[in-house]
Length: 68
Image (cartoon, rainbow, N blue to C red):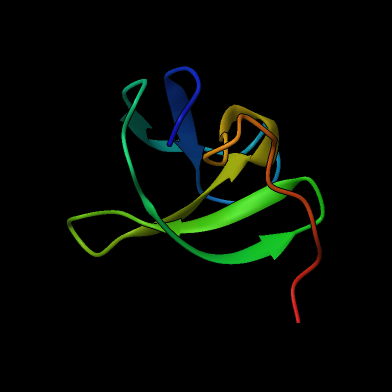
C-alpha cells in the first residue's frame, strides 16, 4: 500500500518522464525490486517505477531487497 501519493516514472530515475500518479493508500502490483525502486504494473497494463520508500508493507516497514 502506498504511504503517500506517488508519481510513476518511466525509468528508475526521478529525472525520467512521469507516466502516471498513484493516490495514497492504493495497492499496485509490484513485479520486481530494482535497488531503491519498485517496478509496478498499473491497472491499464503500463509498467513503471516508484521509489520503494513510498510503499509500506503490512507492518509499516518499507519494502527492501533486490531483483532476482
